[in-house]
Image (cartoon, rainbow, N blue to C red; front, side):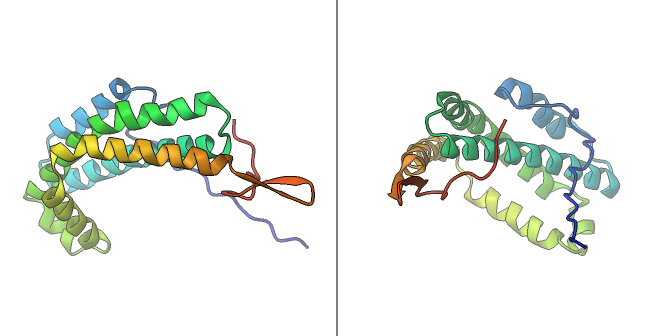
Length: 181
């Protein structure tokens, strides 16, 4: 009997609407502002705040990941290229200062010490403190430039093909084995 594979399902969203899609910075900004202004009056509220922040960051990460995959797999599709570029130039630079403020808010929370002893949180807390140390507003345009150049490289390498036995094979991916809608 063939083994069946159960594909994991995305957990139901609790902070963002189920059908939320990132289209502009203006669609994301209210969720960052909510996290910045929400009262955190105890360790349970801090845990809830972290869960909501994690959900927001997961949605963003998945969105930019798919934008990048589509751009590099379908290098001749101008829309995919523009969508990735839009994220890099018009969304990500606005997120960086908010992320720094959220990190500072977390680090300053009097309830943070209650999480430090829980499994997995020591690494998160260490990373947040290191991110605060390293963040510089002046670096945001540099990261935008780096990501823009990375996009150009991804498109170029994604479009490279080699002819093997009369068949064109994409050098970067070997080919995309899935259909993206």
